[in-house]
Length: 368
Length: 245
Image (tube, rainbow over all chains, first blue to last red):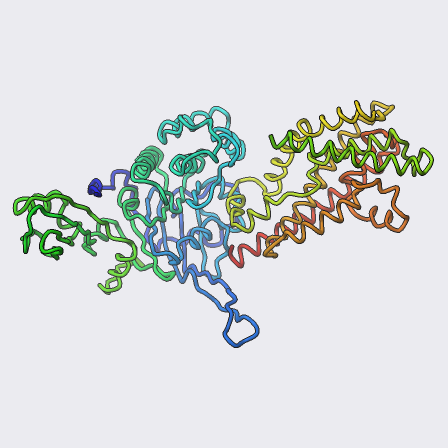
């Protein structure tokens, strides 16, 4: 049985000031690569008509040679993210999320379009950028496999040229917030996935970066580990006012951590706006499945968009409802006034469903 | 455990190599191209001792990181890629020097005896030569690994590299025992700088003054290889940036 996760609180507690408009001043133009930090007021991330093609060689039936094919992974993405914002960047597999992150961190060169991250051009200034951003790739590790976790932080501290004192202070905060204490002395290869991921996040935050980029940080984690990680990420952001850019397949990550959601599909921005609006707009369908003690043909339920389908001769009911309209407790009390609930489970909408909905609604309130 | 096994293997092979070389020198009448029995023993045991710290047989870590895409993590570090891996190499070498370098030398000293250098300068220059050898071997090995940016599989390249390196570095037999034409070829490559030179310098078989040009050659190769590895890395990173990884 899956208990309903905590209803998302209003995530706007660490709200930044006004969001920079996409058509803001062209501050990025013509600036030479510099040593100094970017101006604090400009967007932290600015993507303009960003495009990225991959050339793949695919075998052609009957032909001797493979044919070169161009696959467009990212197609004209424009995005401006202001300092202090927390943005959830979601989309199905292959939507272009990772490619965008690789361009933002300077690992990939855009095929066309331009981008600025913290005022820098990522590819030529990759190493400078690396000092100012913290990146977690959920699928990869930046820790040293055979060394005790603690030693990885000492190495990272030296790489980022932190003084011993600054490193120790920051590490103490991370150890406390992410509960790393019990396994700080263990080699990374012996850590569980949940422990390692907390260690990865600490590694990315050790140098107190202004921009934190998390690529599927909760992948493979159980509910408790996910929640612990999210709680600390919120705390740290509230304390330091960092900008957060997050990709995930778990809508709960977005709900708990972000105020803004950008949905990408086939390499383009399908939706870009406040999370609150997104949920209201789509009515974000959630599904509650209840098993009743006695069969009931039809449940009368609140909510305009609520639908109910009975199965197993009225024992099981699948109830789809709008998250913005109803809370689970309201719904449950309505059901229990009619019948005894024996078991229940709640499913959250998958990203794929949300994307599909965006298209079926035909509404694309992108902010461009 | 791995260290103990490595020490054992190194020592066993040391005995095999020493007996072969002794037989060769004995049949040549006590000295062969500048090597007496004691010098040959020293040559063998130093070779066995330095094999692990120099990592002459190559590593695969970087090529695997390239294949698996973990190179992205390395590129997001605020340090230079080569510097990062060189630092790791030096750390490993330091450990291997103590853990796998000392035991074969002790065994050798007890069983066959070693020819120690006459001049204390040999130790100093030898240590420097060893550092250069480790660096040159690191750079050459790095270039083999960096080929992974373009090759799907670098194992074949590694095998060829190891075969050539085993022979031309003077690890199997001193390069002075080569026929002239092979000696010429060997001297035109960086391989003797990885094994032959540090052994000759450290053992004092080549006195410090005569060893200086050899050490200078090592330094020359270091510069050339560093430049080549740097260019190769740049081209490789560029191909990742352009083609994707």
